[in-house]
Length: 264
Image (cartoon, rainbow, N blue to C red):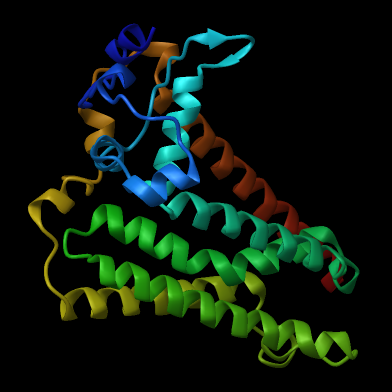
C-alpha cells in the first residue's frame, strides 16, 4: 500500500523503512538504564529526522497496531525527547486557551476578539513564512529572532489595548492613537520584515542545502506544469482569488453607499 501511494507522489525522494531491519528489545526502564539506547534506535531516529512527511502502513493485531510498532515508538520517544516537549507544549497551550476563554465577554463580539488576537500574533508568522520562501538570504537566526521579537511586540500591543478596557478606559492604540487592529497588524508586519532583513544580513548566509526550500521563481508553481483541468489545484486557487476580489469590490461599494447616506 505504501509503495503504491508513494508512486503517486511527484518530485519527492522516497525512503522505504522496514521495521524488520531495526530489531529492538522490548522497552523497559531497567533495560535502558543497564544497556542505554540501542544503536538501531539512534539510526532510525536520525533517518526519521531527515523526512518532511511519513506514509505508514501497519499490520493489524487484535484490532490494533502491531506490538513491534508500539515498541519502536517507545524507544524513539526516549531517543528524541522532542516528543515530550510537544506534549507539554500542547498541555500549556490548552491551559492558556481555557484561561483565555473566560475573557471573551470583555469584547463586543467573538469576531472582534479573534481579529485582535490574530492582528497581534500573525505578523511575525507571516513574515517568516513569506520571506523564508521567497528570500534566498534569510537565515534561521533571522527567523527565530523575528518570531520572538514579533510575538513580544504583539503581546505588548494587545496588552496596551486590552488592559485599559478592563477598567472601562479607552484602549491606547485603537482609541487614543486611532490605529485599528488591521493597521496594527500591518505595521507589526513591516517592523518584523525589517528585523528579518537586518538579522539575515548580519548573520552567515544559508547553505545550498537550506536553499532548496526556497522558490527559484515566485511564479514557477504556475508555469512548471501543464494545466490539468478540473483536478488542478491552481484552478480552485484562481477561483478563490477571484471570489475574494469580487467580495472586496462589493464591500467597498456597499460601504461607500452607507457612508453617503449617513452624510445626508
